[in-house]
Structures are given as C-alpha cells and as structure tokens.
Length: 454
Image 1 (cartoon, helix red, strand yellow):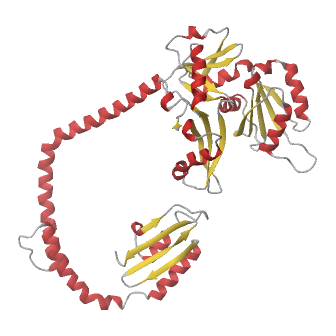
Image 2: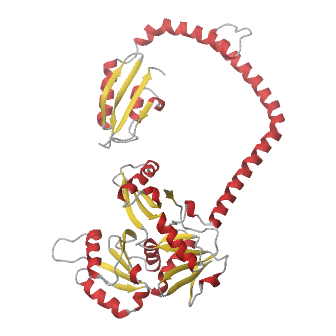
Image 3: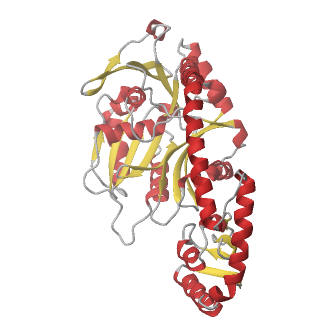
C-alpha cells in the first residue's frame, strides 16, 4: 500500500507530456512563461532524442487505474483522512496493499461530512506502464491519471458558463484507450473506460452520473471531444447525432485534439491547481524526486545542527543570565510565601517551603469550609442547569453524579465541539473532558470526571 503525492513539479521549468499510442507517441513540450505555460507540439517525435535529462510526464489510462468519490462521516478533515484508506479498500476490487493511491480535493460538505476524490492503481499496472515507457526510451517523473488530466485541461481551455450545475461530458476518442469523463460545472463526477463508438455505454453512464429528469424533457449537457479520433469529423458527428436524441446540448471539439492528452499531462505538471496527481510514488518514485526529497531532509538536518551549535556557543552567557534570574525568582518566591503564612520560612526552599505553605493553608481552609458551603449554590440548581444545557446542545446523559467534592457526567453528543457550555456550568476545565470516536449511530461518547474546585 503506497500513498502518493501530487504531480506538480515546482522545480521544473520545462517538461514533455508523452501520450503513448499504438501508432506512435504524441509529445508536447511545455515551458513556463510570464503568461503561464506555453505548449508546443513535437511532431514526428523520436522519444530517444528527448535526452537523458528531459523531464517527462506520462499517464495511466482509465483501464489501468480507477477514480472513486469517497465520503467519510466526519466534519474534521484530519480525522476523515485517517479513515479514507479504509473506505477506499472497501470499494477496490483488489487488496489495498497491492495499490498505489492518492486522495485529491479533500473537502468538507454542508452536511457535515468529508468527501475526497480517490485515484488508485495496482502496483503491477504501474510496473507494466513504466516498462512500456522504458521500451520507448522514456522514464517519466510523474504518472498522472489520464481521465482527471483530461478533465482539468478541458476546464482550463473551455471554462463552464454561469450555470454551475450544468452537465458536462468529455469524450476522448483514442481507440482501446478511449475515456468518458462526466461532471457538473467544474466538478468531476466520474471517469470511465469507453469502448470507442459505443454511444449506448455513454448514455447509460450519463443516467448513472447525472440522473434522469422527470417528465418528457431530456437531459441537457455540454459535449466536449478530444483525442486522435476527434480529428474524424464524420465519426464525431455520427456519435453526436445518436447522443443528442436523449442528451441534447452544444458540442465542441478541443483544439489540436490529437495532442490534447499530451498537452494536459505537460500543463498540469508545470501549473499548480486542483486535482493534481502522481501515482509514481513509494517504491516507484523517480530518482530525481527522491534526490530532491533527500536534499530537503539534509537541509532540515543542517538547520537543526546549526541551531544546536548556536545554543552550545551561547550556553556560558545563558548560564550567567539564568543564574541571576533564578536568584531574583527565589527572593520573590520567599517573600510571597511568607506573606501567605504570616511568618518566616527560615532556611526552607523549593519543595520544603511549598510543603510548609500547603500545610498551614489547608488548616485555614478546613476551618472556613462550613462558612463557604453556606454560600454555594444548591446541587439541585446545578442539576437543573446541567439538564437545560444538555437539551440546548443535544447531549444525551447516561450518568449524572453531582456532589460537593466530585462530579461525574457521562453520555453522548452529536457534535465534537458542543461541550463548552456544559464545562462552564460545571465549573471545570476542558482537561477533564474525554471524547471517543463516534459509534454506529454517529454520536460521540464523552465523559467529564473531576473533583470540585480543581
């Protein structure tokens, strides 16, 4: 099981996006410029001529990887991220231990849950794809997910209009590696391997992802086309005619569709943004990435070492200064302690002095306890306040024990952060609060146990 990082190459100024096809490779050279990323098609490319130092980016197709939306029943993102691998494992048709995976766009929903787009591939498929690239003389630094890359590039080149809920469909025609990507507005819903020309499969997927409207009015979507197959205007028109009967909408063919995937791979590697992905991680990490990671680790170690040397050099002066401050603190401590007990401490210091002060103050406190208790609110008033607080904050009590010396409250809550008012009513600090993970009913068990006045 390997969790990978993002595919943004902050350190690279140029790179090549490589789309391997049965009839050869489609390659795009990308370079950063002041206006963004500038892409140039490399026609009749011989990959061996790119050079050993070339930064190349490849991808895993929808048949070699999968994309799934996951939803965790927690509003806290850090807590949700701990259970996402388990949720992914449930949806995978193979063991998670045999996979590389990444979580993209981890977001909190209005319903109080956390959603994440998971991308995963079997290690055997990653190895196979790297061998295929190697056979062509390419060692990609990044392995992106092709469907996600196509979607983000389509949004980049043709942003959606004002209707954020409108359906959007991208069909990338590339023979056996064709792919269908479905979404709404800028949000991606699903990535599916597609049999080229199979409009029936497209319609079924749209019903599954976009739903079916009530009544006779068919669904409306915007259609986008890319891939080498999109160069054939007749084939695209025939497919569109069949699809328009049930899902009418405007249709666009992306510019230079044959090089669209290579352009997407190269652009994403050089430009930061959402849905960035690199499935080449862990044991498959490219040497250049590993070398930079080691460099960052060495730099951090050097900072720690320099800080340690600086502390060692400063220690004689620090001892002199700290000695003076300790003497001054001892004087203040002794003066304050003697004012509390109304008498001299003599030679007693530190723990011995505190023991003398505690002993004398305890005797005075015991003598005053009956007087103080007479002015304390009754336990019945406290119980009423606890019950009203529980009602206002959806707290369900299982145990409520209130005494003069000790309190104990146990129960469940619907919200991880709904205890501040109860702690205030009880007069105790948050250190006495204990919370556990939510149970099957999504309620959070809690307990508050404390001595009164502490």
